[in-house]
Length: 417
Ligand code: ADP
Ligand code: MG
Image (cartoon, rainbow, N blue to C red; front, side, top):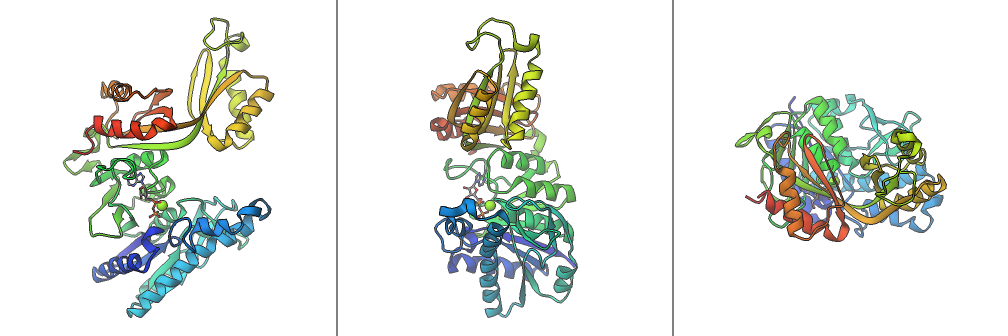
Protein backbone atom coordinates (compact mmCIF):
# COMPACT_ATOMS: atom_id res chain seq x y z
CA UNK A 1 0.00 0.00 0.00
CA UNK A 2 1.26 3.46 -0.89
CA UNK A 3 -0.03 5.63 1.91
CA UNK A 4 -0.35 9.39 1.83
CA UNK A 5 -1.29 11.64 4.76
CA UNK A 6 -2.85 14.99 3.91
CA UNK A 7 -3.43 17.59 6.60
CA UNK A 8 -5.71 20.57 6.02
CA UNK A 9 -5.52 23.63 8.26
CA UNK A 10 -8.29 25.91 9.50
CA UNK A 11 -8.55 28.32 6.57
CA UNK A 12 -8.47 25.39 4.13
CA UNK A 13 -11.72 24.12 5.65
CA UNK A 14 -13.46 27.37 6.54
CA UNK A 15 -15.87 27.82 3.60
CA UNK A 16 -17.64 25.58 1.08
CA UNK A 17 -15.36 27.02 -1.63
CA UNK A 18 -12.24 26.20 0.36
CA UNK A 19 -13.53 22.69 1.07
CA UNK A 20 -14.12 22.20 -2.65
CA UNK A 21 -10.35 22.72 -3.11
CA UNK A 22 -9.72 20.17 -0.37
CA UNK A 23 -11.85 17.66 -2.27
CA UNK A 24 -9.77 18.29 -5.40
CA UNK A 25 -6.56 17.38 -3.56
CA UNK A 26 -8.21 14.27 -2.14
CA UNK A 27 -9.32 13.26 -5.63
CA UNK A 28 -5.85 13.85 -7.04
CA UNK A 29 -4.33 11.59 -4.38
CA UNK A 30 -6.85 8.81 -4.99
CA UNK A 31 -6.31 9.10 -8.74
CA UNK A 32 -2.58 8.64 -8.08
CA UNK A 33 -3.46 5.38 -6.35
CA UNK A 34 -2.66 6.39 -2.80
CA UNK A 35 -4.47 5.04 0.24
CA UNK A 36 -5.38 8.21 2.01
CA UNK A 37 -5.47 9.51 5.57
CA UNK A 38 -6.82 13.06 5.87
CA UNK A 39 -6.10 14.98 9.08
CA UNK A 40 -8.29 18.01 9.68
CA UNK A 41 -8.09 21.08 11.90
CA UNK A 42 -11.13 22.95 13.21
CA UNK A 43 -12.78 25.15 10.58
CA UNK A 44 -11.66 28.74 10.20
CA UNK A 45 -10.00 31.24 12.49
CA UNK A 46 -11.10 33.22 15.52
CA UNK A 47 -14.63 34.52 15.02
CA UNK A 48 -15.66 31.69 12.70
CA UNK A 49 -18.42 29.62 14.32
CA UNK A 50 -16.53 26.40 15.14
CA UNK A 51 -12.92 27.56 15.23
CA UNK A 52 -10.83 26.60 18.26
CA UNK A 53 -10.61 30.22 19.45
CA UNK A 54 -14.37 30.61 19.13
CA UNK A 55 -14.94 27.53 21.28
CA UNK A 56 -12.54 28.99 23.82
CA UNK A 57 -14.57 32.21 23.68
CA UNK A 58 -17.59 30.32 25.01
CA UNK A 59 -15.86 29.95 28.35
CA UNK A 60 -13.74 33.11 28.24
CA UNK A 61 -15.41 34.77 31.22
CA UNK A 62 -14.98 31.73 33.44
CA UNK A 63 -12.06 29.98 31.75
CA UNK A 64 -10.15 29.71 35.00
CA UNK A 65 -12.98 27.67 36.46
CA UNK A 66 -13.18 25.02 33.78
CA UNK A 67 -10.77 22.21 34.66
CA UNK A 68 -8.17 21.43 32.01
CA UNK A 69 -9.65 18.01 31.37
CA UNK A 70 -13.08 19.41 30.50
CA UNK A 71 -11.55 22.25 28.52
CA UNK A 72 -9.91 19.66 26.29
CA UNK A 73 -13.31 18.04 25.79
CA UNK A 74 -14.65 21.37 24.57
CA UNK A 75 -11.67 21.95 22.27
CA UNK A 76 -11.94 18.48 20.70
CA UNK A 77 -15.33 19.43 19.22
CA UNK A 78 -13.94 21.75 16.53
CA UNK A 79 -12.10 18.99 14.68
CA UNK A 80 -15.01 16.58 15.06
CA UNK A 81 -17.31 19.05 13.33
CA UNK A 82 -14.94 19.74 10.45
CA UNK A 83 -14.22 16.01 9.96
CA UNK A 84 -17.92 15.17 9.75
CA UNK A 85 -18.59 18.02 7.33
CA UNK A 86 -15.75 16.91 5.05
CA UNK A 87 -16.95 13.32 5.27
CA UNK A 88 -20.42 14.36 4.11
CA UNK A 89 -18.94 16.16 1.11
CA UNK A 90 -16.94 13.07 0.14
CA UNK A 91 -19.96 10.79 0.42
CA UNK A 92 -21.93 13.22 -1.72
CA UNK A 93 -19.28 12.57 -4.38
CA UNK A 94 -19.40 8.82 -3.90
CA UNK A 95 -16.05 8.68 -2.13
CA UNK A 96 -16.28 6.28 0.78
CA UNK A 97 -14.82 7.89 3.88
CA UNK A 98 -14.89 7.25 7.59
CA UNK A 99 -14.17 9.63 10.46
CA UNK A 100 -11.98 8.63 13.40
CA UNK A 101 -11.46 10.75 16.50
CA UNK A 102 -7.93 10.91 17.88
CA UNK A 103 -8.85 8.14 20.31
CA UNK A 104 -10.39 5.96 17.62
CA UNK A 105 -7.31 6.49 15.47
CA UNK A 106 -5.22 5.03 18.30
CA UNK A 107 -3.35 8.23 19.16
CA UNK A 108 -2.17 7.78 22.74
CA UNK A 109 -0.76 10.80 24.58
CA UNK A 110 0.57 11.60 28.02
CA UNK A 111 -1.70 13.22 30.59
CA UNK A 112 -0.82 16.84 30.05
CA UNK A 113 -4.17 18.36 29.12
CA UNK A 114 -3.93 21.27 26.72
CA UNK A 115 -0.40 20.45 25.64
CA UNK A 116 -0.25 16.67 25.49
CA UNK A 117 2.53 14.80 23.72
CA UNK A 118 1.88 11.79 21.54
CA UNK A 119 3.45 8.72 23.10
CA UNK A 120 2.36 6.01 20.71
CA UNK A 121 -0.01 5.27 17.89
CA UNK A 122 -1.90 2.02 17.43
CA UNK A 123 -2.48 2.06 13.70
CA UNK A 124 -4.32 -1.27 13.23
CA UNK A 125 -7.75 0.20 12.74
CA UNK A 126 -6.54 2.74 10.18
CA UNK A 127 -4.61 0.05 8.31
CA UNK A 128 -7.72 -2.08 8.11
CA UNK A 129 -9.85 0.79 6.81
CA UNK A 130 -7.22 1.70 4.24
CA UNK A 131 -7.09 -1.90 3.04
CA UNK A 132 -10.84 -1.68 2.56
CA UNK A 133 -10.25 1.35 0.35
CA UNK A 134 -11.85 3.87 2.66
CA UNK A 135 -10.56 7.40 2.99
CA UNK A 136 -9.78 7.79 6.69
CA UNK A 137 -10.47 11.26 8.08
CA UNK A 138 -8.77 11.79 11.43
CA UNK A 139 -9.56 14.70 13.74
CA UNK A 140 -6.28 16.53 14.28
CA UNK A 141 -4.95 18.10 17.48
CA UNK A 142 -6.24 15.39 19.80
CA UNK A 143 -5.60 12.03 21.37
CA UNK A 144 -6.48 10.01 24.39
CA UNK A 145 -4.52 9.37 27.58
CA UNK A 146 -4.09 6.02 29.31
CA UNK A 147 -7.21 6.64 31.39
CA UNK A 148 -9.36 7.15 28.30
CA UNK A 149 -9.62 10.94 28.72
CA UNK A 150 -9.48 13.18 25.65
CA UNK A 151 -6.41 15.35 25.38
CA UNK A 152 -5.35 18.11 23.00
CA UNK A 153 -1.86 18.67 21.65
CA UNK A 154 -1.52 22.46 21.93
CA UNK A 155 -1.48 25.11 19.20
CA UNK A 156 -0.47 23.76 15.79
CA UNK A 157 -1.10 20.25 17.13
CA UNK A 158 -2.82 18.98 13.97
CA UNK A 159 0.51 19.21 12.16
CA UNK A 160 1.92 16.79 14.72
CA UNK A 161 -1.10 14.49 14.42
CA UNK A 162 -0.37 14.30 10.70
CA UNK A 163 3.35 13.58 10.89
CA UNK A 164 2.92 11.13 13.77
CA UNK A 165 0.33 9.23 11.73
CA UNK A 166 2.64 9.43 8.72
CA UNK A 167 5.42 7.88 10.80
CA UNK A 168 3.20 5.15 12.27
CA UNK A 169 1.78 4.25 8.87
CA UNK A 170 5.12 4.59 7.02
CA UNK A 171 3.49 7.04 4.62
CA UNK A 172 5.28 8.05 1.44
CA UNK A 173 4.65 11.74 2.22
CA UNK A 174 2.88 13.91 4.74
CA UNK A 175 1.33 16.85 2.91
CA UNK A 176 0.59 19.90 5.03
CA UNK A 177 -1.97 21.99 3.14
CA UNK A 178 -2.34 25.57 4.22
CA UNK A 179 -3.15 29.05 2.89
CA UNK A 180 0.32 29.85 1.45
CA UNK A 181 2.36 28.19 -1.27
CA UNK A 182 4.81 26.42 0.98
CA UNK A 183 7.51 27.55 3.32
CA UNK A 184 8.42 31.07 2.30
CA UNK A 185 11.56 33.08 2.91
CA UNK A 186 9.57 35.11 5.48
CA UNK A 187 5.98 35.48 6.67
CA UNK A 188 4.08 36.80 3.63
CA UNK A 189 1.87 38.82 5.95
CA UNK A 190 4.92 40.97 6.61
CA UNK A 191 7.07 40.60 3.53
CA UNK A 192 5.04 40.95 0.36
CA UNK A 193 7.66 39.53 -1.97
CA UNK A 194 8.61 36.55 0.20
CA UNK A 195 9.37 33.56 -2.02
CA UNK A 196 8.38 29.92 -1.63
CA UNK A 197 11.37 27.64 -1.07
CA UNK A 198 11.42 24.54 -3.29
CA UNK A 199 13.14 22.44 -0.65
CA UNK A 200 14.48 22.78 2.86
CA UNK A 201 16.20 20.47 5.33
CA UNK A 202 14.32 19.26 8.42
CA UNK A 203 16.72 21.11 10.67
CA UNK A 204 16.30 24.39 8.80
CA UNK A 205 12.51 24.38 8.87
CA UNK A 206 12.49 23.19 12.46
CA UNK A 207 14.71 26.10 13.33
CA UNK A 208 12.47 28.54 11.44
CA UNK A 209 9.37 27.12 13.11
CA UNK A 210 10.89 27.38 16.60
CA UNK A 211 11.80 30.99 15.85
CA UNK A 212 8.22 31.87 15.02
CA UNK A 213 7.47 30.82 11.41
CA UNK A 214 4.15 29.29 12.26
CA UNK A 215 3.58 27.66 8.87
CA UNK A 216 4.34 24.30 10.49
CA UNK A 217 4.71 23.24 14.10
CA UNK A 218 8.31 22.39 15.05
CA UNK A 219 7.30 19.26 16.93
CA UNK A 220 5.65 17.96 13.76
CA UNK A 221 8.93 18.40 11.91
CA UNK A 222 10.87 16.57 14.62
CA UNK A 223 8.52 13.61 14.45
CA UNK A 224 8.86 13.39 10.66
CA UNK A 225 12.62 13.84 10.83
CA UNK A 226 12.99 10.99 13.29
CA UNK A 227 10.97 8.66 11.07
CA UNK A 228 12.55 10.04 7.90
CA UNK A 229 9.18 10.79 6.31
CA UNK A 230 9.30 13.66 3.81
CA UNK A 231 6.85 16.54 4.31
CA UNK A 232 5.44 18.71 1.55
CA UNK A 233 4.04 22.08 2.62
CA UNK A 234 1.55 23.13 -0.03
CA UNK A 235 -1.32 25.48 -0.76
CA UNK A 236 -4.88 24.18 -0.63
CA UNK A 237 -5.85 26.82 -3.15
CA UNK A 238 -3.49 25.95 -6.00
CA UNK A 239 -1.56 23.09 -7.51
CA UNK A 240 1.79 24.67 -6.74
CA UNK A 241 4.22 21.87 -5.78
CA UNK A 242 5.06 23.64 -2.52
CA UNK A 243 8.10 23.02 -0.34
CA UNK A 244 9.68 19.62 0.13
CA UNK A 245 11.07 19.10 3.62
CA UNK A 246 13.46 16.18 3.86
CA UNK A 247 16.82 14.96 5.11
CA UNK A 248 18.38 15.37 1.76
CA UNK A 249 21.11 17.98 1.75
CA UNK A 250 20.46 18.52 -1.95
CA UNK A 251 18.18 21.46 -2.64
CA UNK A 252 17.21 22.80 -6.01
CA UNK A 253 20.19 24.55 -7.51
CA UNK A 254 22.73 23.39 -4.94
CA UNK A 255 23.09 22.17 -1.38
CA UNK A 256 21.66 23.34 1.93
CA UNK A 257 25.23 24.04 2.97
CA UNK A 258 25.66 26.43 0.02
CA UNK A 259 22.69 28.53 1.01
CA UNK A 260 23.93 30.93 3.64
CA UNK A 261 20.60 32.47 4.49
CA UNK A 262 17.33 30.61 3.91
CA UNK A 263 14.78 32.77 5.63
CA UNK A 264 13.86 35.33 8.25
CA UNK A 265 11.53 34.50 11.14
CA UNK A 266 10.08 36.69 13.84
CA UNK A 267 8.52 36.14 17.25
CA UNK A 268 6.85 39.10 18.97
CA UNK A 269 5.66 39.62 22.56
CA UNK A 270 8.79 39.02 24.57
CA UNK A 271 10.32 40.94 27.46
CA UNK A 272 14.04 41.38 27.94
CA UNK A 273 15.24 41.01 31.52
CA UNK A 274 18.71 42.10 32.64
CA UNK A 275 19.81 40.97 36.08
CA UNK A 276 22.78 42.83 37.53
CA UNK A 277 25.43 40.44 38.74
CA UNK A 278 27.85 43.06 40.13
CA UNK A 279 27.96 43.81 43.80
CA UNK A 280 27.39 47.55 43.72
CA UNK A 281 24.23 49.07 42.32
CA UNK A 282 24.31 50.39 38.81
CA UNK A 283 24.63 48.61 35.53
CA UNK A 284 28.02 48.58 33.92
CA UNK A 285 29.75 49.65 37.13
CA UNK A 286 33.29 48.48 37.66
CA UNK A 287 32.77 46.66 40.93
CA UNK A 288 33.42 43.04 41.78
CA UNK A 289 31.02 40.38 40.59
CA UNK A 290 28.64 39.02 43.21
CA UNK A 291 29.51 35.69 44.88
CA UNK A 292 33.24 36.31 44.62
CA UNK A 293 33.35 36.11 40.88
CA UNK A 294 30.93 33.24 40.54
CA UNK A 295 28.12 34.37 38.28
CA UNK A 296 27.27 30.71 37.80
CA UNK A 297 25.69 30.55 41.27
CA UNK A 298 23.52 33.50 40.46
CA UNK A 299 22.64 32.09 37.05
CA UNK A 300 21.63 28.84 38.62
CA UNK A 301 19.45 30.65 41.17
CA UNK A 302 17.78 32.83 38.55
CA UNK A 303 17.01 30.06 36.08
CA UNK A 304 15.94 27.63 38.79
CA UNK A 305 13.49 30.22 40.08
CA UNK A 306 12.11 30.69 36.57
CA UNK A 307 11.78 26.94 36.07
CA UNK A 308 10.09 26.40 39.44
CA UNK A 309 7.50 28.96 38.42
CA UNK A 310 7.01 27.43 34.99
CA UNK A 311 8.34 30.51 33.19
CA UNK A 312 10.13 29.60 30.00
CA UNK A 313 13.26 31.56 29.20
CA UNK A 314 15.00 32.19 25.91
CA UNK A 315 17.79 34.20 24.34
CA UNK A 316 20.19 33.91 27.26
CA UNK A 317 23.39 35.97 27.29
CA UNK A 318 25.66 35.98 30.30
CA UNK A 319 28.60 38.29 30.83
CA UNK A 320 30.59 39.16 33.97
CA UNK A 321 28.24 41.98 34.91
CA UNK A 322 24.81 40.83 33.75
CA UNK A 323 22.54 37.90 33.08
CA UNK A 324 20.31 38.79 30.16
CA UNK A 325 17.37 36.74 28.93
CA UNK A 326 13.86 36.97 27.57
CA UNK A 327 10.47 35.70 28.75
CA UNK A 328 7.06 35.98 27.12
CA UNK A 329 5.38 39.34 27.78
CA UNK A 330 2.57 37.67 29.69
CA UNK A 331 5.04 36.05 32.11
CA UNK A 332 7.04 39.25 32.58
CA UNK A 333 5.30 40.66 35.66
CA UNK A 334 5.63 37.38 37.49
CA UNK A 335 9.28 36.98 36.49
CA UNK A 336 10.15 40.49 37.65
CA UNK A 337 8.47 40.12 41.02
CA UNK A 338 10.14 36.76 41.62
CA UNK A 339 13.56 38.31 40.93
CA UNK A 340 12.82 41.30 43.18
CA UNK A 341 11.68 38.98 45.97
CA UNK A 342 15.08 37.32 45.64
CA UNK A 343 16.64 40.71 46.30
CA UNK A 344 18.12 41.06 42.84
CA UNK A 345 18.63 44.28 40.98
CA UNK A 346 17.21 44.22 37.50
CA UNK A 347 15.97 46.16 34.49
CA UNK A 348 13.41 45.00 32.01
CA UNK A 349 11.91 46.03 28.68
CA UNK A 350 8.47 44.82 27.57
CA UNK A 351 7.25 44.63 24.00
CA UNK A 352 10.30 43.28 22.27
CA UNK A 353 10.54 40.91 19.33
CA UNK A 354 13.07 38.30 18.35
CA UNK A 355 14.06 38.39 14.71
CA UNK A 356 16.03 35.43 13.39
CA UNK A 357 18.14 35.01 10.28
CA UNK A 358 18.24 31.31 9.47
CA UNK A 359 20.44 29.35 7.10
CA UNK A 360 21.62 25.76 7.15
CA UNK A 361 24.82 26.85 5.44
CA UNK A 362 25.77 29.95 7.40
CA UNK A 363 28.17 28.17 9.73
CA UNK A 364 31.62 29.66 9.38
CA UNK A 365 30.62 32.14 6.69
CA UNK A 366 32.19 35.47 7.55
CA UNK A 367 30.33 38.75 7.26
CA UNK A 368 26.73 37.69 7.89
CA UNK A 369 26.57 39.40 11.27
CA UNK A 370 28.09 42.53 9.73
CA UNK A 371 25.41 42.52 7.04
CA UNK A 372 22.70 42.19 9.67
CA UNK A 373 24.04 45.07 11.74
CA UNK A 374 24.42 47.22 8.64
CA UNK A 375 20.89 46.51 7.39
CA UNK A 376 19.34 47.24 10.77
CA UNK A 377 21.31 50.36 11.61
CA UNK A 378 20.63 51.79 8.16
CA UNK A 379 16.97 51.46 9.05
CA UNK A 380 17.40 53.06 12.48
CA UNK A 381 16.71 49.84 14.31
CA UNK A 382 18.37 49.50 17.68
CA UNK A 383 19.71 46.00 18.35
CA UNK A 384 18.98 45.25 22.00
CA UNK A 385 20.72 41.89 22.09
CA UNK A 386 22.16 39.37 19.68
CA UNK A 387 23.40 35.80 19.64
CA UNK A 388 24.13 33.09 17.13
CA UNK A 389 24.26 29.34 16.63
CA UNK A 390 25.64 27.31 13.77
CA UNK A 391 22.52 27.85 11.67
CA UNK A 392 21.01 31.13 12.85
CA UNK A 393 21.64 34.60 14.14
CA UNK A 394 19.08 36.18 16.45
CA UNK A 395 18.56 39.81 17.25
CA UNK A 396 16.23 41.33 19.78
CA UNK A 397 14.53 44.55 18.73
CA UNK A 398 11.64 46.66 19.98
CA UNK A 399 8.28 45.37 18.80
CA UNK A 400 7.69 48.62 16.91
CA UNK A 401 10.82 47.87 14.84
CA UNK A 402 9.95 44.24 14.12
CA UNK A 403 8.28 44.56 10.72
CA UNK A 404 10.90 47.05 9.54
CA UNK A 405 13.67 44.69 10.67
CA UNK A 406 12.25 41.62 8.95
CA UNK A 407 11.81 43.56 5.72
CA UNK A 408 15.27 45.10 5.89
CA UNK A 409 16.94 41.73 6.46
CA UNK A 410 14.90 40.07 3.72
CA UNK A 411 16.11 42.77 1.34
CA UNK A 412 19.69 42.71 2.57
CA UNK A 413 20.03 38.99 1.88
CA UNK A 414 18.17 39.32 -1.42
CA UNK A 415 15.74 36.60 -0.48
CA UNK A 416 13.16 37.83 -2.99
CA UNK A 417 15.52 36.94 -5.86
P1 ADP B 1 -3.08 26.45 9.11
O1 ADP B 1 -4.37 26.88 9.69
O2 ADP B 1 -3.21 25.98 7.70
O3 ADP B 1 -2.32 25.51 9.97
P2 ADP B 1 -1.30 28.58 9.96
O4 ADP B 1 -1.91 29.92 10.17
O5 ADP B 1 -1.00 27.76 11.14
O6 ADP B 1 -2.22 27.78 8.94
O7 ADP B 1 0.06 28.72 9.12
C1 ADP B 1 0.05 29.39 7.88
C2 ADP B 1 0.52 30.83 8.06
O8 ADP B 1 1.87 30.82 8.51
C3 ADP B 1 0.55 31.62 6.79
O9 ADP B 1 -0.68 32.21 6.49
C4 ADP B 1 1.64 32.67 7.07
O10 ADP B 1 1.11 33.93 7.40
C5 ADP B 1 2.37 32.13 8.30
N1 ADP B 1 3.82 32.09 8.12
C6 ADP B 1 4.72 32.59 8.99
N2 ADP B 1 5.97 32.43 8.54
C7 ADP B 1 5.88 31.80 7.35
C8 ADP B 1 6.85 31.34 6.40
N3 ADP B 1 8.15 31.50 6.58
N4 ADP B 1 6.39 30.73 5.29
C9 ADP B 1 5.06 30.55 5.10
N5 ADP B 1 4.12 30.96 5.96
C10 ADP B 1 4.50 31.59 7.07
MG1 MG C 1 -1.00 25.73 11.63
